[in-house]
Length: 135
Image 1 (cartoon, rainbow, N blue to C red):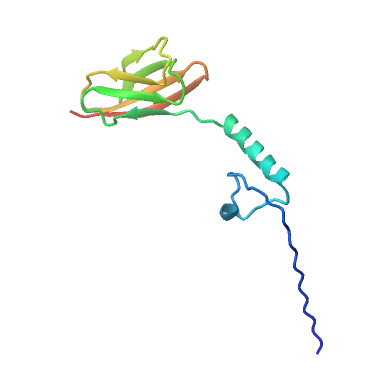
Image 2: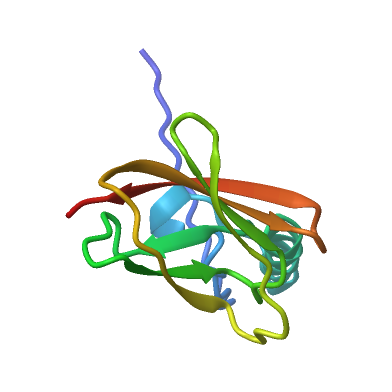
């Protein structure tokens, strides 16, 4: 019986910095050169910019003392509507010249579940969040 074993060893001295979008330990993918790694970084930053998600945060939630803060990912410029479970409008707020991404609202409501609806007129986007009032 005849068998042949052969091994080849290749030594590469190039240093390729892997960008955060594809760390070697995370996905096992690496590149042959720095240009390929840089292209991945450029493509990821373009995707991140185009898919930036806006969100509305309410703090504290549940509301105990009638005061809560809305925090938006951008400047608050749209219309804010608070509705009860039956869909009746409890309060409408149209902020003007806030120049801020935060707004504190003071309102006394009965204990229960309400909904905050924020309509961003610039983005033509509507965000609805649950709001719980407790006494």
